[in-house]
View (cartoon, rainbow, N blue to C red):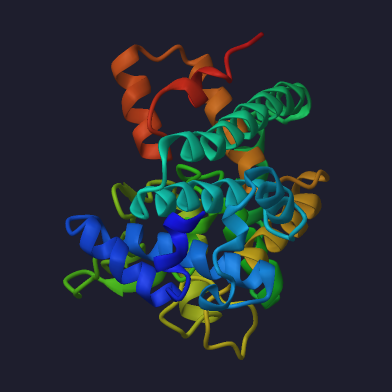
Length: 308
């Protein structure tokens, strides 16, 4: 691997700058994601890149096994491996060597997709209907009293947003800020816009108005009586920082167990919603629009929810 020697002393920062020069018109999120993947490699191996002589690139199978032995999710591992492929391209390694890594990625990506599809079929057999979920949540909101505790209203709000509005991916709510109409917002950030009478979720590529009156009532209660910060979700009364992704997922698991008597993940709630949509038999243009709103590149994921 003599062709890699000139990169042996490159740090994460060096590769980040190299990446930015190679792709000058990429989005900030693309740069950030690439850099985070390299930092993730450093964390997994417990060494800085400039001290590793790029030895993690010697064997793609060994690299994959090392990544999968970490605590990161399958999606994060695949993202990391994808960025390593990008790194290989940046370093202009020989095609035959690059293809060895590509084969590993393709194999495990296809394996993951197959497993996800099987898991989805199984989930759809026991998931409550979306309409039933909505009615249970709406009933909870209507029966709230003034003495509801912080944790209870926080859990209920997270679940309500994923059932009484379009259930976006949970990571959209990490660090989400509350702003008032007319306030400046930053690119590539998610916001809840409060104009005094209405609430609107402003995601990076989609804007969704809160139309359900029960959800509007709950959001108003949360912001005026429980959460004085500029973040939509905080973990406790004294917190000044937003909830982490793990905290959000845990909160939803606790809330759904209490509300529905079955612990559901954000993806389970999205699956129930997508099954509800596909049962309405949308045409292809509607499917494309729905897939875009839900954060998918095409309609394949939506079509998986057809009755089998």
